[in-house]
Length: 361
Length: 70
Ligand code: SF4
Image 1 (cartoon, each protein chain N blue to C red):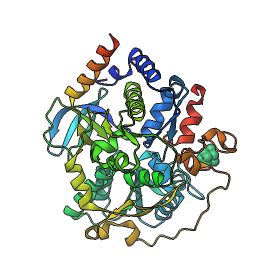
Image 2: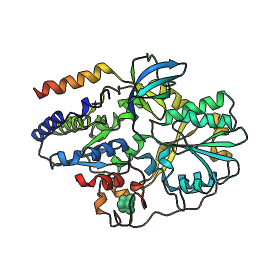
Image 3: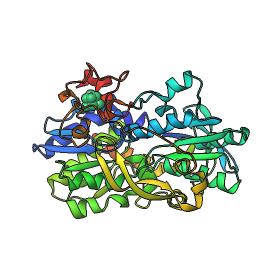
Image 4: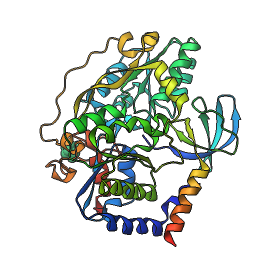
């Protein structure tokens, strides 16, 4: 496929590895904050190719994982209401809330439908006027604009039976929160597709205020290796800045049209990140104009407070302080079929990626 | 979830387009992108074109690698 095979050339990858080795022998920790990177890094066995002094850490980049049990519980509560159809991306359906999952509810008769895009959810609303159709909005700046397009369309076309339950979140506040907690990293492998929308400018405060290196990175082995090279060089030269490795999709200003759509529909709110805690202005909720489409305001949703398993160390993993193999539950009690904590919930989570591909470690 | 794939725009139909992703044709929302022509490559994510892929940049990066390799 175009620009996929080319970016998987193993000779070039090995050449980059050689170059990285010549720059620095110092201990360097780099954090990726995109679930797509976590998956790619493990799938291509990147950690085993890197010199020993370079450590990669999976930060809070999996939207399904950080969205928390409450969100799933709310969705399940909604699915139990009369005449409600839940529409969602496939990623979410198997995730367990405190007692059940959407998949289980579906097998028990709840009307839950997997959609490929928000427009498909909107179509379902159009064709089921006697039902209330709720879309579960999840993801970072990559998916939030897609939700925003559907909201605008529903509003303009007077589709009065379409609602949004949002868990959308944005990236810069969580990166800042980690840095404020003095998490020990030297550089960020910045998300590629979030940045295709936002542009690389959202990371500029990081080298300026925290002196941490940033490279916006693509998802193929060459992309990741080149970024590690660029980051290592910035760190060695003591010249932290924001660079774009993934220049075929990312510019400094990003996709301004998508940004406008997103800003018209959403405003920020304080939000809870599973495994991390509450972070100011890190979540997205619908603006007042769209209050009639906000499932949280329209429906009476009752859920119970839930506690995380006390042995789960996911919070420390997302902060780069521990690795999945340090967890007592890993692989024994906690596995992809029975996820106990946030990091095992989706294929993009740190623990699940580690579980699936650990043969390479 | 955060994965997006490059696809080639085959036919634009108003605010959607048929895009070939690895040989399969998918219907993609074009609301977020401007000035995309048939034949262009776009990043497809959850049923929308997120951004046009800059072919010149893609080839340039590859050329740099090849030179480096020599
Ligand atoms: S293995 Fe499971 S319980 Fe342990 S940290 Fe990871 S998600 Fe939490």
